[in-house]
Amino acid sequence: MQQTQPELAISTEHLRKVYGGSMGRAPFVAVQDLTFSVERGQVFGFLGPNGAGKTTTINILLGNVYPTQGSAQLLGQPIGNRDVRAKIGFLPEKFQFHDFLTADEFLDLHGRLYGMSAAQRRTRIPEVLEMVGLTARRHSKLREFSKGMQQRAGLAQAILNDPDLVILDEPTSALDPMGRRDVREIVSALKAQGKTVLLNSHLLSEIEMTCDQVAILKAGQVIKQGKIDDLLSAPTTVQMRILNQTPATGRALEKLTGKLEVSGEWVSVTIKDEAIIPELVAAIVEGQSKLMSLVPMRETLEDLFIRVVETGGDQ
Amino acid sequence: MISLWTIASLTLKEAFRRKTYIATLLVAVIFICWSLLRMPFHPGMSSSPDAMSADQNPQAMADGVGKFFAWLGCGMIKFFSSVMAITLAAGAISTEIDKGVLSVIVPKPLSRVTIYLGKWLGLLIYLAASIALWAALLVFVVWHLTGSFHPRILVGVLATCLFPLLFTTLTLCFSTFASNALAAGLSLIAAGISLADDLLLSLSTMLQNDTLKTISSLVGYIVPIGKMNHWITRGLGTSGFDPTTLRNPLASAATSADLVYICVYIVAALGVGIWVFQKRDL
Image (tube, rainbow over all chains, first blue to last red; front, side, top):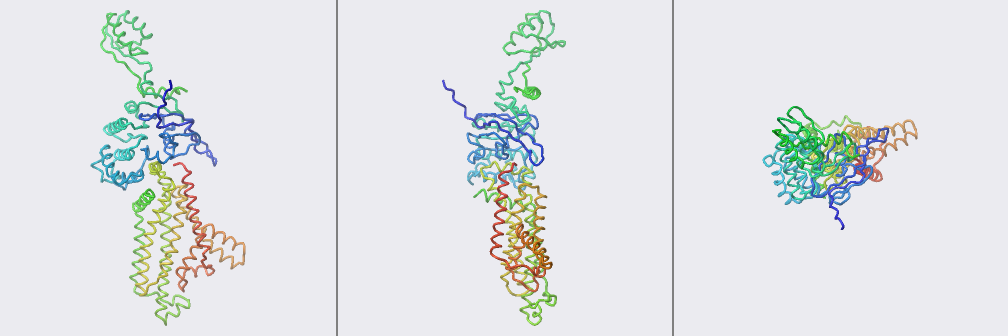
């Protein structure tokens, strides 16, 4: 039986970007050998420590930077295709918009650059302003905006053209908790509409909440990629508070999990499958001990990130 | 085409934001102040036959005064429009790259050629508007002082427009690879080199040195400011108050070939700027 290939929103093949290397300047490899793909309709998290090559990769995808080697496709077309660009929205990490414009004028300008008609702009601009919570400030100049409000305006610009692919580079870096929640809701809404979102953020808890898949970069290479659920299904720690600990309870737990870490009333075990938890409870009860609490400690994305970056991941 | 005008209008707004209109208004005020002068230029200050005859002929005197102010006005327009062109164009690309403004515009469905040409056009529209205001005031001043309309002023101003056109194109080209200050500096160096054109020609004649004459000719091709000056002279006509004649009595006549060369030079600078902008990373 033939498996159908998923439609890809982004695919890169051995991308490489080297800065310098001429006129006596030492070459700097920003992206080493990057191959990854993002299926359409996914929210994809792009992670990595500072200097891992995330922003350079995004800039290559958007045509701001030319790759030294390799190739990439967006929505099935080579990067730089003008029809595809009309279907992409982008919010850069470091931006400075024309702050002498009002929010309305700013979006009108970018609507024109997207090739939107006047009628489309008239309809769409109030919609996106509402989505990012700037309706009340639509006639204010961007220079009067706080950093967070400017980021909201930038986000409005990124979704103005109703794009199929939205690339957000640190979209919440200047936002307060409410702003971050709003961005999460916008990303969820985009996903519900079948849009693809590439999200580059250092806020791993947000990535964990919003993304389907992640790729972790280090030194310009993908060192781990996969669905978040799969990546985080690694061994889980269970912390229990047990009163009246007996040797029988200890032996039974050791038999089920292999190793116990006991610190007073607290017992910590590592399990490979969460299905074993009811057996742990039964063993404690049978051992005449009292189970006061049981907390399965699942590895967070942050734990995974630190572990993978420090160990080098799958490499 | 819509994108081109969008970028051009954005560049215009950016020029306004930078308050360059203050310079425009300042020069306009100078022209207006001239119109308040009640005493016409004293013909005795010149040794030219035209001006000498002005003592006896009020019409010749009026013509002399008119030509003097036409030359002075065109000189001011040339200087201020060139300075404004360099100031505005120097940061038009490099500063926007540094600030990250272009990183949001380049991914839009428009070519880099459109962005570059839009900026170039926007700057030229701004400078053209300033020059139009100054030219109108200059014509008024000369009419006010002499009581007659001097149409050659308009031809002279038209030739003067070559200066901001050249400096905008050249500086914008430098701005694609150099920082704001460096791009402005390179343009000033180019202007400095071109000043050597007339100087070397005078020296070559005085010293009867053919090598200097050849170098002078070469310098005139590196930055064709001398050739553009000849066209201003052709536009305004020479007079007893003609500062070009005083500065360089050996100034050659403007030729069509020179004008073609100037146009080719500007188109080439535009082409190089577009090519570099298309090839560079942001």
